[in-house]
Length: 401
Image (cartoon, rainbow, N blue to C red; front, side, top):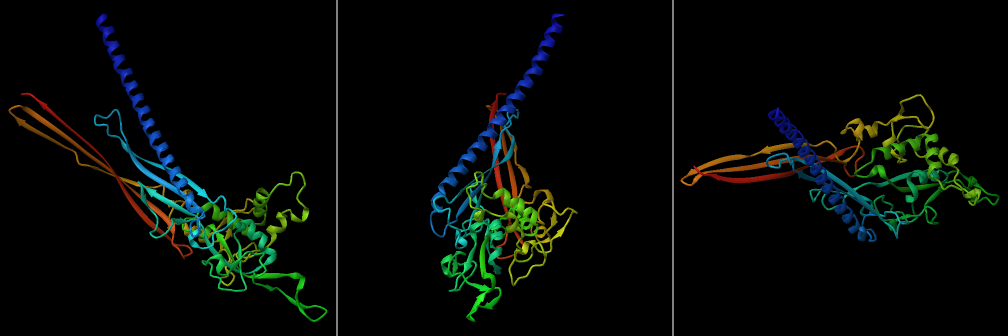
């Protein structure tokens, strides 16, 4: 009976001991991963904080975002050699202009950027500040009445070509681009009539800007899919535009904003921007509308804010990625290659047998970075990265004859 009880106790001890060791291993694994993640987050935050000095300078990005990726080996305590696997860790931090937030980018060097580092290595095109997340776009013959809808979608980034001319969309504001309210903004009458003194005047004071420039997130090297879809829906769907306008406008809780200064979302969103718009899905290069919305078609029968659309241009831009993971930058899919060059050698001598164990374990992670090519509409480029993390273990043991 005693022998049976002793055997049972040993069995229970072995089982519970194994469970405890397994739990300790899980805790150690979790602790190491949490430590690696926190360390990377702090490093990324410090990088972004260090970039704040750039924001106040001319010809430097107006916003900087850092994305850092690291592969770290996390040991397996239950393995004799401590071999585990390589886990990817990722952190992001960003900074924007503060004291000069009223300014907008005047040239390509001042556009907001994303900087990607993998294992401390710079992964963005050489001789640039990073991947741009917005770009300049020009439109022509824009009615002054329609400007409020442009502001609703693109904010206060709009500029008008001045009477001096020389307005290249990529040139600095001082080279021809002025605020819309500037007296030198180049405008023409939509319809000219004669006043009682036979002087030509604009009928009903209706004018149009000959050329405007705006900063469009859809023109960046790295484009956010949801943002570009939202822009198109606001341009072509009046009801969706009104819902976004109402959500964004200042709430006049105490009725202190004069009625003539309060945003009328219904009026703003019923204006038609340059095509494609709510009346046409055709893109006219002479007017320079939002080309990425062209050719749209409704995909359901509703006609309210829930109306969904198929945008073939956007679908073409993001054709490289699965439907549910439409994103540029570092792609979520990666591959790992495991290389094992372990060896075991035995040497016999008069003093005994010496055994040398060498474990050389390397995991290579291959990633892809997708981004739009500068100066094109719907083509994307691919940048690849291979990152190797090695694990090396060596032991020597000598036993007597």
